[in-house]
Length: 126
Image 1: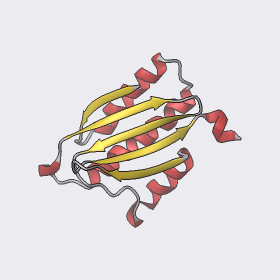
Image 2: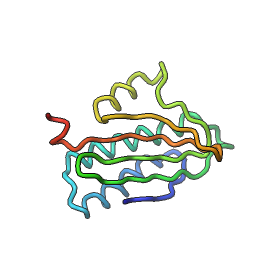
Image 3: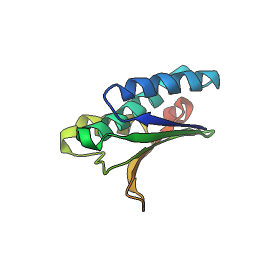
């Protein structure tokens, strides 16, 4: 399991993608699956960044957990985030193609989890 604090600032998606690319490659994960997970993480981080003003920027917690058939991605945000809405129809289509499921969960402490389940390529093909 990968669990890292990331700063929710412009450029965060790039740093998060580089971090997970190294970690997943070290674990021997397939390159196509790493790319899919990178794209999903970038979209989740971008959604978090779009919904905040400079005063709301803080830290998020990125978690990845590998399972035999999928990789579970979680991004805990310190503020409310809308993941799928009309202006981001492109995001919705891309996440729909790369994931088995995607969503958002409100926590009792006021944080919001953005989550996605990314199927391994063998599972996606069947």
